Length: 207
Image (tube, rainbow, N blue to C red; front, side):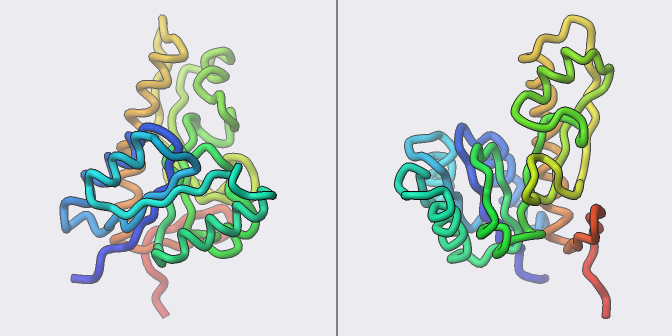
């Protein structure tokens, strides 16, 4: 059996998606192992979840650096120390920059609480509700320099029901998002993946 894929997870908050990945990785057949968890601020539950699981952690606050570019380079260095096969932004509330993507481009994935390309940015559930769509959902994508614009790995649809509030809709999207993330990272780890233009294909290239 091949070595599990090394995954570094970056968090900014409670780490519910991180916990789902940690739980999934407990099964040897999942094919991935969370080797480190990084954060842009200390004292958060996401870091505590990692520490309880015995996973190494690191924290790099933007405020500790003179420029955003210096922070981005330091983050790239901190992540590179763990030689990850996949980097997961799990509720990470900072945009990674050009230096980070130069090192890890094509290996960094993030989730978005809408069906891309609809409703990019921070307020996907609220905008979907305001627009009156009947179906929204969650998207997993490979991070590029844009905001929620990268090639799509997976999507899960979530029905908008009468009486939904932003909170109730977002909660159902989060459930779909966690399932999508766990299933997709496992598949990417076990099967390998390639990014060709805007398409993400599962499976390793055969010479």
